[in-house]
Image 1 (cartoon, helix red, strand yellow):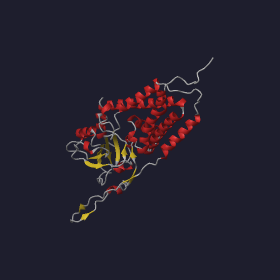
Image 2: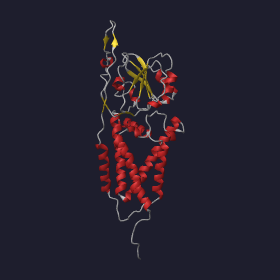
Image 3: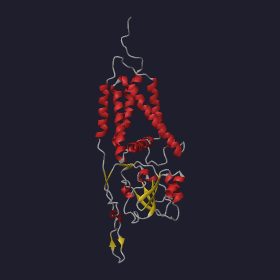
Image 4: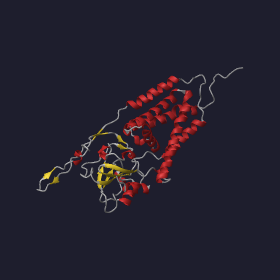
Length: 359
């Protein structure tokens, strides 16, 4: 019986272009942005939570290293799958379906978390600023990925039955993807630490302000800092505040009682409504316990809200790094040791328990 000149499987040129060109270019574009910036804050919140929880599971103590490793691994996987789509006709559709399904699952989780925290409008308008500068609204990204996935499902590509799936091409794609992801060096940030302002002595002379924190375990303020910082604040409980790399970035000079007295520490963003609600509810007016408010400087100053706490000692974290932390963070410290931490300011019982914590 005569056969057709081509044994091509049924499909369309549009389906072929979708899985061999459009989807891999879309994936490479996202991976390229992440690789160029190496900014973990471009990762969705659920992914960041998985990274933090996996660090606990595997006993990883250096969260900065683990987050950097995880970010580069994800970039490597994305580049690998994009190359597979370019190089392997038989695997292209599977690779496109897999990566788009993962993207959509993550976006669904992101939208659910945003809606639960900030209301349904956060799905299309972004967050309240609790996670610093935000990416495009998740609903828009969801719509793009969903349309691409529907196209991959319903528009079958043309596939030559005679072309086998080559395992070597997958290995080559993995080598290139992970090679690129791990070959780009991490930037280092150098900052200039301002000298403490001079103080007047009893005899009228002017003397330099002593940096008391150097004598009590804090050491000098760092001048070379990491490109990003992440913290598992729950693990801070029971440890000296001065032992935490993120805490060492707090602007100097620090109060001389920081390693002896009881005080509250609030990490906040000036444009974060949840942060200001916490400060208004618990730090308005005369304070029975001293409080230090540390501003995370990764926001647009035009969106800054007025500081409601008049008696808080105001400090900052240096500009430059990406702070992969959600604010506000409330702590109680006594004798230099962290007694309690609250990461959910809407849990009033947790807030009160943190404020009332005792050794």
